[in-house]
Image (cartoon, rainbow, N blue to C red; front, side, top):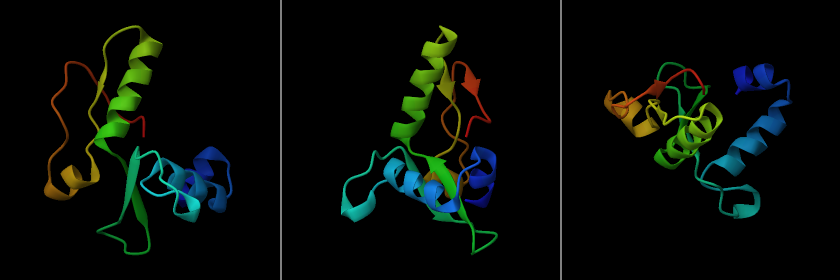
Length: 99
């Protein structure tokens, strides 16, 4: 989260709150958007790694497709795919490095 905080120029608390809203559960146990999930970093237990869910990957692909005016499918792995060693779906046109 430190890298996200630095890149976005926001306080750690703001990043944490926004990640919760984008994830499964928002504050006060309200449902989140389900666009991302976080897991403990397998290499460094104090860190969290943030991944797009399938729903998040579809959402970002649609946004980028609208912006570029052509069909784009994001090739970022979900947390489950990352942990299993998969790299995500094969795509017509992939965009990486967005997240």
